Length: 204
Length: 204
Image (cartoon, rainbow over all chains, first blue to last red; front, side, top):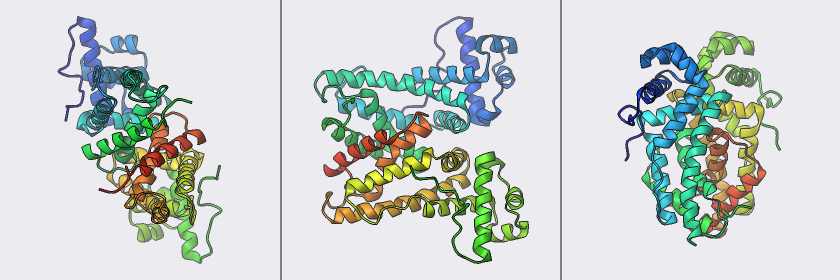
């Protein structure tokens, strides 16, 4: 299984600004995992990152923007879709990517912290949207390229198909609190693919 | 849409013991919705229910058992499956029941409070199991009766099919934080049914 995205160790080339951002987002993620969204404070993040509070307040303004920026960055760095492939390969790569993300001790804990907070906090819900909108849109593009290649009925909604493959994995782990594994990921893909080939994912 | 289950007003005939239980579970649910699992205390429940602390400690022992008992009771009272029907009717009734439960302001908030707590608390996860195990088993029985009637391939796993219909609704509302509606419920049923008819839910 791929390792979950953790910002540390993945610093991209860049100057002082990029380094500050990486340090601050890493501290944000550590605080989220260890203390949860509701106890996350800008001051604590500043102290943990070793960056002046003024810099953090000027650049991000609020705790919500900090978490939203982190989630966008995680979406960009984590498990990018393959450039191309059969629909089945792409859907299986998506299922494996979801499985790796939600079961990774560190990345899974980050997601769960934001998901839990989003049940009672609109800002956390916004940060979650920032993550899933970006992730799903990127994967949907690859599915839709395969649709254009004629593998699935014209008009098949790639984003909806990606969500259908992901849903059972999230539901089992985060709602039912049951283990998830590769076999379940494969079943999810097989079921969605049968329905998609029958036209059940054509946008109405 | 059916009203979500709220214990108040649904007191079943019974003596003092049943009345105490209803009052205590109602107070537990109110506390969960208003304050969340992590701030729920036995003393607060006792005070809200107007029942002596000794009674509550003697009968339930721990906060986790209180919430587990509440979730079992909600599973029993909420949205029971129809006695019989075509597989499609039963799955649609399940999807509507899930939709009603998760979007009901009071019952949905109860579920979300326990789901959020379960991300970081084993006892809350246990209470969630108490709810879903009971609910899914009851609905699976009705699906499996239809399977025996020959509507779906022999060996189709009723519980797995019920979970497949429910998953997208929970995933959209509680993970993606997007609205869910009757049309989505119908799509979820249609897709699962196509896969089920093709044998994709036969237990391996």
